[in-house]
Image 1 (cartoon, rainbow, N blue to C red):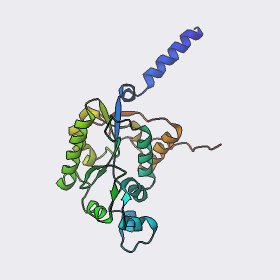
Image 2: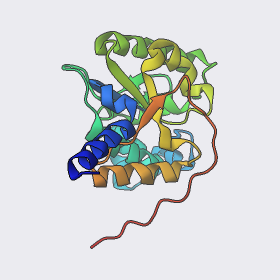
Image 3: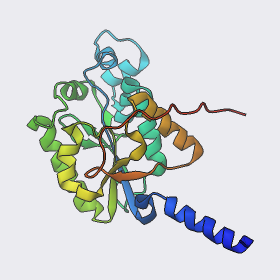
Image 4: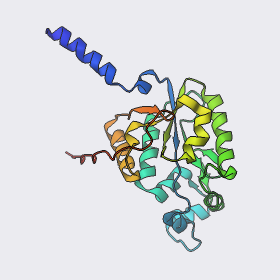
Length: 229
């Protein structure tokens, strides 16, 4: 086989291996699942007795939601936020990142949250059967769908194994609702590390439609250690 034919076949193979959603995407918006506002680290920062700087900021002027959830969740939310900031490509005039919240719908990660607002979020369960959670989420998702348009992909950076995110969102975004294929079978820490690695390497993950996805799968091999030079 000549070098010209070999090069042509290599290019053809590269096109075939490229994730279909990335090949046709025009715009892409990310929805980030929330940190556990009722967990130990959330209770720590919302305690009236907390004296560390982030807790004092929360009680005084407020803290951006993304920074707050990164503290509460650690590696997983930090990975989601860093990944979305790098790879979001929204339509003009539409934000590229939203955080799913309990009772407040879709919120910008840059929105300031006060102590009282965080207490309100912690009081609402992330449960698709609870209207306090579901109705604000569906309201904001419908508005986002209208503004983003039919050719914008919506990528959920969160679990699809339960109904709490999928059920409210799938009926609104339908085939536009995607998730990273590499999430299947991974725990939260592994997903966080995977996304931070993608940011470091400048390599976006592949996506597939949530509606037709396998929601449970075998645990994939551990990520190889990053070797710094």
